[in-house]
Length: 197
Length: 109
Image (tube, rainbow over all chains, first blue to last red; front, top):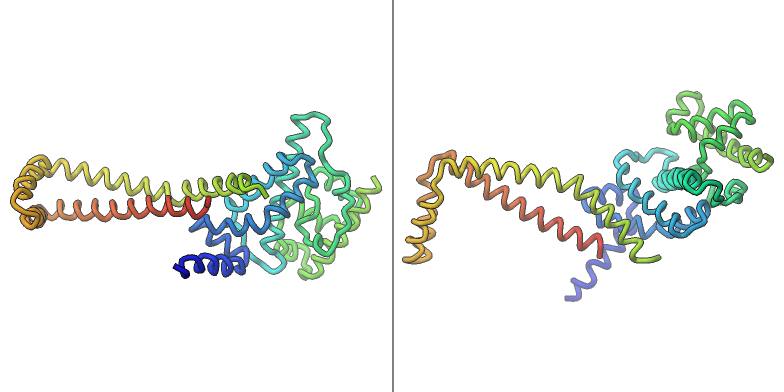
C-alpha cells in the first residue's frame, strides 16, 4: 500500500531530474511525460507571452500553440553545442508570439498590444539566452541595414535565415565562441539602433 | 496556473500522440483482422461450427474445449493460420485500447 503511494512520487521526482530533451523524447512514446515540460515552462512562457501581447487570453493561446509546436516538431530538435532545449523552446515561443501579434494587428487594425519595452530590454543574466532575442523579422531587417557588415551578417543568418550555429560557423569560417560573441555584440547594437529610431 | 489551461495543452498533445502513434497502428490491425475474417467467413461455415459447439457444450465444459481443439486441428492449415492471426491481432488491439485509456488517465489527470 505504502509502495503504491510512494512509488509514483519517487518516479515523479526522478523524472523531474531528467534533461528536457530526454523528457521530450519519452513524451513521444508516452505523452504523460509532457506534463513535466508543461509544469516547468508554462509560467515562464506565459510571462514572456504577456510581455508581447497584453491580453491574458492571447498569451494563453500563444503558450498553448508553443507547447503543441514543441511536441509536433520535437523530433527535429537535436542537442548540439550551444543549442539547448530551452533556447529552442523560447525561439518557438517568440516566433509564435510575433506571428500571433502580426495576425492580431491585421484583424484589429491599429490596436497596439506590443510592449515597446520589449525592444529596450537590457540583457540580464537570464536573458543572455540567444533565443530570447526579439524575432520580429521585419523590424530586424530594417535595423540590420544600419549595422556593420560582419555583425549584420551573423544576425541575418541566425535570425532571418534560421541557420544553426554550426552552419554559420562553416559559412563564416569562425569558431563557435567567436560566433556567440558576434551575435551578442550584434544583439546589443541592434537594441541600441532600434531604441534610437 | 489554471488547471484547465494545462489540461487544454495536454489534451492537444494527447490528440497528436493518438493520431501519430496509435491510429495508424490500430487502423492497420483492424484492416488485417477484417481481411482475415473475410477469408475465414468464406472458408468456414461458422453457423455449423457454433451449432456443433452448442451440442458439445451441453455435455460438459471439457467436451466443449475438446470440440474446439478438435475443430481447430482438423481445419485446413490456412484456416489455422488465420485463426491464430485474428487472435494475435485481437490481443494487440485490446492491448492498444488499454494503452489509449491508461495514457489518457496518466496524461490528463
